[in-house]
Length: 160
Image 1 (cartoon, one colour):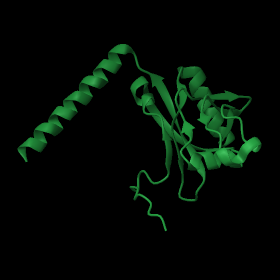
Image 2 (cartoon, one colour):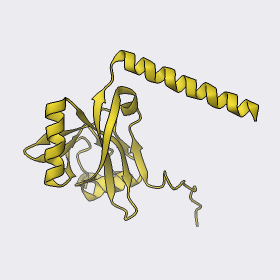
Image 3 (spheres, helix red, strand yellow):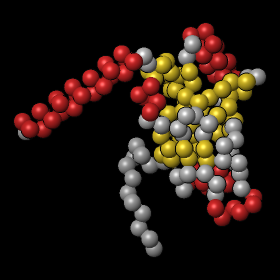
């Protein structure tokens, strides 16, 4: 029997994370959404074949769609494979979709995907972030704050 690497409780079901989102945006609110997928897409996700780079959420006709997320082809499927770059429907309640669409339209916010993970029941979920774009000076301030925290942590480790 093969040994599997022990995962932390926080990282137990994570498939993909978009860390660049936190550099480019202020995340104001997060929300969990289900994904409507085919079987080969779920198997590909279990193997870690998900890429969230440049992915976002678009609301069309009261439906939320995940755009730009790539689920790598599942090799054993052969010809019965899925399209890796197709838009995928997000499973949300109607009033959630309407509220998000309203905030995006009125406040000029963006809907981005911060991570995709398996929940405790084994279902694939996406964490959506309602985000506001950072300006260049905001990015510099964030980097400066991060450097200061790092220096404080180093000093504390040296002191004992």
